[in-house]
Image (cartoon, rainbow, N blue to C red):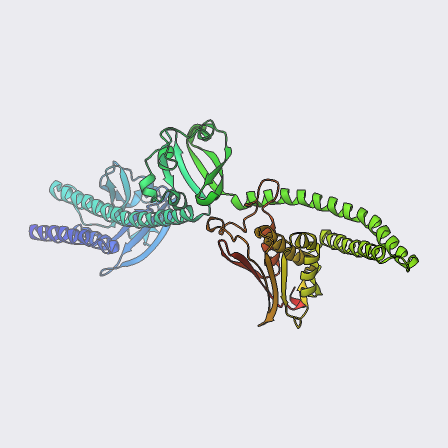
Length: 544
């Protein structure tokens, strides 16, 4: 080969190699260009590029046969263990020249080549440092190995090809790894955002502390309790930032968590106007490697409503027992009352000619006995245990009158005036008769308690309009103090002296009204009186 061709081929080869490396998008073009130029340099009849699988370099190889132009004539894959030729290529191999006798006809490298036409081959191993990428096999090359200058240049071309293929493949893998890394980073960010959203919006307060009580993480719900943002609290001591203490809280259970023991305690946090929030604080150890505990997670759960319901249940059970006792007593009173009424009636019948004072006394005994019997009957009706599905139609006005009759003794004893403005055309109400009668009675008793003078007036009205029942109880008593107005429907809240009230009357009344899908409101002025307004919908029986 003329020296000028040697120079021209070498120049074109390296120029093409550099160009393909600078534009690594099509690694196939680089492989074709490099194989084609080397094949032309050694004047080979055929050339095949064999690359070991990147993911399974010891198992699988891909063979590409060079065609005319910038394309492969054919491509196929085979197992490395089936190819003696590929098995002989190692990281220390250099250019290998073989004659026809050294070629195995069964070798898959020559599967699509007429073996009888092969006179000799050159195997050019593609090695980069200790990485064996594969090899280029040239069939029937016209190349003189005795020309050391050309042999060294051929080896240089092969090494350059190996480095270029490795660089492009490595760059391709870096691109894939970068894409996978970006995808992983996106997943991490997405997971972090999801966890942060969950952390901040769970309906309980959560924060994490280490052994020095330093806040490692805190959710928004907990930080809002001290009017701070989470990042303003992280890094500070929990007892300082959250509770305003100079030392760890006296009842803190965090140290138990660092001993691997979960702990629970209760804390009541007082607010304005004697309001409070009841917190259940759960401390759980966070176990790390070697089962060590260096952090603890603290959950603050608002259980005020649960605590009130439990206390209400206990109190209700006590009241139920007292009510049952009262009912039993009332039942026992019925017998002597019946005897009193019967004997008074017998005396009136047997003494028709008695003097006027005696007859008036007998009539008074009969009237008082009948009135007492009605009160006992109303008490027994109110004490009867009801089922939630026991709705019935009843007269709203009559239930109000029955409630007045129960409280009639105190009304008469204190000379309190009752003013009634009851709508006589009001339709029957469908609901719990005795429960609602209990509401009327409670409002009357409260009104009696608010009226201090003997000139007290209690006004009761009923009205039906726009498919609603409106019942109003008003008095001219002391009214409700401003600081108490927000709490009158709270369970166990009372302004009465100890032993004179449970604080459950208005709370139970409001619950009964809610069970009837109604509303209860009040209007009050200190020193001028209070008015309670109840609105009940006219519900169809089938909707109950």
